[in-house]
Length: 436
Image 1 (cartoon, rainbow, N blue to C red):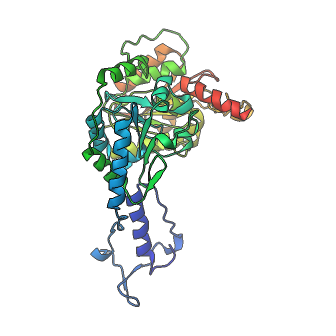
Image 2: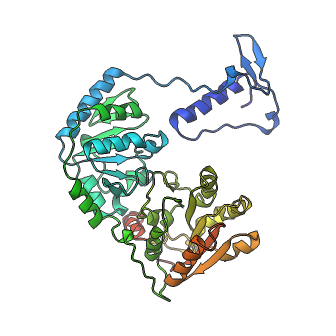
Image 3: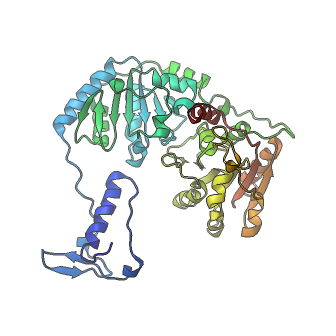
């Protein structure tokens, strides 16, 4: 912003775009113009200074939405209804835009109306409560569970609602999404097979499906049975006995963390195995899982805990972060201490970039070891734990949840250098072949 006569209009345009698209925007303000008055244009030649009270005429007004083409809408709904009703194995892939545009309630209506099972993407995990009887799991392509992959990749009608076509969501899938068997709708486009429909917004299309004559499927028990027998069945067990002095593993860690997830927690996972391992956790509420699964920017999780808990103080963050990512932004624990927040920060300490090692090993994956548990001494707040065995993990989590429930806790979980979650092992096996 460098023109005081157009600044108000430009700010309005950018903020309106953020509201309309539900994505970040950027406003660059040179330091030497911060205090410069801005103007609103009342006519082609008349400008008025904006006072501190900021007049009604300059308040943010969302730009006019794109018009809805009702002919395209009706034709798209007719074609989609025919395709869904004639299919034998339809499945809904619910994407992150369902959350961003506040459409979760409409999605649940569609699921209840049709009994069509639903999966999430990596970016949209927890868009639907993972306790829902028709929720099958997260579709992760090559690194996902075979049972979830089978349902998605064998479907004759993929209903992709608000799902972004990113490399993490679908790029590592051994079976690409085929247009010929897809209904793909986002905030920007709608396509059914090879037909493209203009000016049919996501929300209006979803509302139209609710009113459309879609038939109700009759396989409630079979869906529930397949889900219990495959996806995440072991992690749902509540019988958990740690073995004294047994070396801690990534798999055991996530199984134990799964027992700590309640309706009063929010899981925030950083990139790498923090994210891949966390995809197997069961999130009971809607949108109670956060991760940087679009850009995969390291160092997201600890700062994100600040925003998440300040936005909803009723939720206690469980932060899962690798040691490499923690060394980038982990000292935001100082801000956490300042605002007296109480996340449980779990550091996966394997001495470096564990996601990279199985694909291309070398000293460039190593980092300087920190004594993570003693950061609390620097900050003079919080409680730190060193964890090397299963029983130490149990004691630390129990203390964090009970004795130290009102302050932040940091768990330094010391893992073997090459230990990884089952999802990471599957992923690196695929990507490692490409690197070689």
